[in-house]
Figure: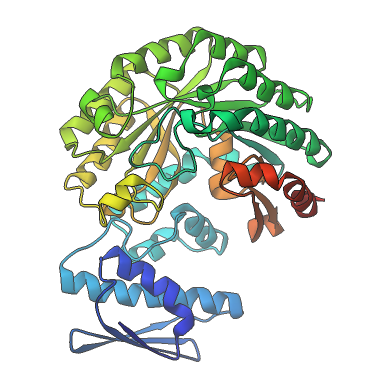
Length: 455
């Protein structure tokens, strides 16, 4: 239970920290005050009062609120961390983009590391963020333009950890034809909006899950836009959906990059999370994709189904042996709509920190560099998701989307278009309906609203 005095508007920020510690059901009293650059936070918890005073001189209302939120979160973090004897790798930072905060500090002429230390971020993670900024610099500096996203939200089955709108294809196959027809209309409709395309990304779901004829129609629709040769990714997905026919279609239509997403190389874990393929099929899919000359990404998830750090290290080793251009390491997250969240109200992954540290060490030793990162709520141990690349294989789409360095023109169900204004200081969004029937029924309105956003 919460008693607020003079600070109800700070509740969302404060609750992010409280949830981090699993203290949602506990009683707090909270008072906030500001005067002449002095931010005062008083917290009542377990019969004690804790006072915090911080000084910062805000230039305007936006900056004032930024400081107020920052100091409120830090105050609650300090109280709960001390009371529970727990600290988190990113301290009181609860936002999904630590890199964005680092860039803001650098743009203001300040050392982001100083703020991160103030907020309780572990030194190893300050170093890690710095490496990400360095690796992604070339893409980050190319501000502007547009990235195109095409959503194909169909999967063979739904994994336990998945929160996407997808259901087993057996239940949605009757929607595929109408869905693809809508995509064709949408893609044709965005042609006048496109000026400088930087990348194309067809994501899922599992795009390779639909049949060849429908898949080719989507590729043909993109080709009809007559775009220049740019980085072009198909998040092909599960290894058991890979076929030479699909890969040949990708090659014929100019795709340059595919994603093989096993999540783990442990067959026992694959069975537990609802996957219907084996690690041997992952290697077969990878070998097929390699024959066609694509850049390849492999996705892994740390913290799946009672895996130990040793288990995760095994998957990392197998992935590194294949030597893909990119390896993305996700930390397991509890998301609304996922079966895992229904069964597990709070994630307890004992070795999660060891897993992430191991991934950083092994990948760096193998010549990979971190090039983008983001965080999610309810992520095991408060860690992050991180993409790693070899040499110059920084994925433009991932950097642009995560750092919000370009407009994103997105089509399909659950696709979120974004327009970037004022050098990234302001973002406007338009989200299409999440479920496929609603998307199909509302296509005309969707196209009109996107036109307003970009028109």
